Image (cartoon, rainbow, N blue to C red):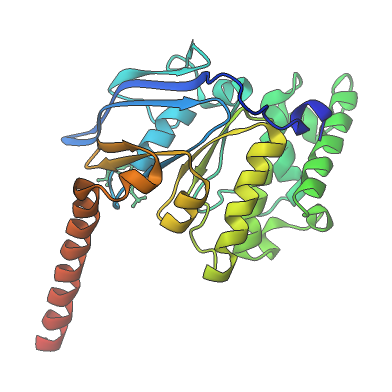
Length: 285
Ligand SMILES: Nc1ncnc2c1ncn2[C@@H]1O[C@H](COP(=O)(O)OP(=O)(O)OP(=O)(O)O)[C@@H](O)[C@H]1O
């Protein structure tokens, strides 16, 4: 990685808002998935969006990365309004994104997936970067070099020329991160990085998240259900419930708030009741 990207954020520097979301509302037909949400993520922090299933977390991430158009509200990155811009333009401005299920091109190699992730940074188009001709040749060589550096940095260099489809799910998840990093993001949006990670590897994942932040000077906004990871890495969290902000602040404090406990327990009770009903229904049938 370049020296500039390797520099850790300096201790004690002033907080600067990188991402500012104001009055974000998303309606899907009659359903209000996100309701009048305000969020500020400061440069260099790890911020977690948590909440029960269906709370609206992924929808918020989709609005920031440009996959869902909100019904109202504003989203700014370093002061620049994003809403008029498409997903690709936002990626070029520094928004990187991973997905719960990877969403890689499984019939391409790992390296080719990273080149796709990097193409928002290239002046030549994606097609030219995959088929190097004319003036794109030098840029493409540099992109390949950078993609290999990222793979090496993540310990994935031996998989560069493997087809994604042949690799286990856990590895594909990390390749999803490598692909997002290939776009050299300032803000990395991570959708449930701990989902599917075995318990014994959760602490190592938390270490990795801190390393990505510190060594690449990244800001991380993550959705996460695993509270061990959230408490280990996040400086601040926002709890969503039915699309509304329920609480915000330091994880240790927020996760003890009665309203937050109730939101989680309430949903668990709903699920327990449904499961009991299904069991008794099946038993009766
Ligand atoms: N494209 C869509 N069309 C209609 N409804 C949607 C769409 N996307 C999400 N929803 C609904 O919006 C609500 C919020 O969904 P969302 O996926 O954002 O929640 P979440 O907090 O990410 O949930 P989970 O933790 O289960 O991933 C849910 O009720 C969901 O069914």
